[in-house]
Image 1 (cartoon, rainbow, N blue to C red):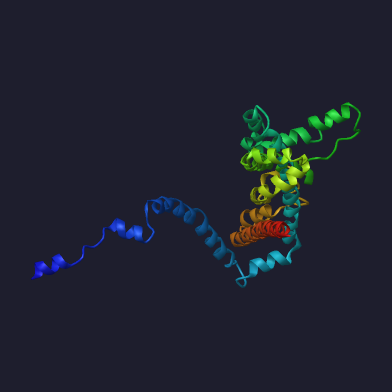
Image 2 (cartoon, helix red, strand yellow):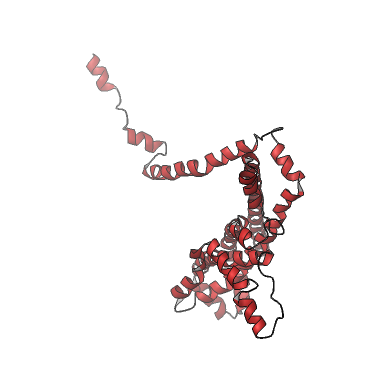
Amino acid sequence: MVLQGAAQRPARPALKTRLAAKGFDGTTLLVLPGLIAVLALFIYPFLYGVVDSLTPQAGAWYENYRRFFSDPFLYNTISATLWLALPVTLLNLLLAVPIAFRVRLMRRQRLLTTLLVLPITLGTVLVAEGLLNFLGPQGWFNRTLILIGLLDTPLRLTNNYWGVFASLLITGFPFAFLLTLSYVTGIDPAIEQAAATLGASAWRRFTRIFLPLLVPGLSVTFCLAFVQAFAVFPSAVLLGAPAGATRVISIAAYSAAFEEYNHSLGSAIAIIMGAVQLLVVLAVLGLRGFFYRGSASGTKG
């Protein structure tokens, strides 16, 4: 009887079959290492930073944030960083789009692309050192202008806003250009050829065909390039005025953590820095959605 009951009992599915039924197949297992890496390298440090920012050396749990937003020397770093990051990102995007359109039609595209992205391999410190020698009071740029009689005294292009701006422009352009080029080359040339055959001018082809197709890519490129520029640190120290106009928020976080030895305040400033970046990214993505809704309503109309 016991053997007969065991024979009538349905066989239990294999472990692999049960896991697959719950969505744990081979692809899911391949994702697990990446998920563990994200947890270890981003989520845990982020949560640790949040907790650290809420445990100040003295005062209530919000003391670090109160101090930041009540001290102009601290909260003005937000506007100083935005004043650098936003114009640099916009200019890099405005330069990357036409250059990417031109490069995609050239025969030696690979060679030119390599030359344009070369600054990204140099690093921000080396670029900053080079600009100090090139744009400094005794640099090649000023000496050349004085030699040909265009200037009597050197222009001040370092240790101020413009030095940091030039450095961010040089190091950020390859990043924006590569992303833009990938989006531009992904558009089927037959679409443009069909529009040209129907008599559309180059400007109309760009605004009516390319721009709507590029908006998703350009918005993502803007967000990534902005985050990169907003995190400026070496350029602001080497080419700017760390205690003046180019005292960016990353310098404030560094000073709090490693000069004042107030790690909790440094964590709070880092959290604020991330929150500002997130707000700008959400605003850009929201504008992208607004653009698509406007395009859709215009098409229906």
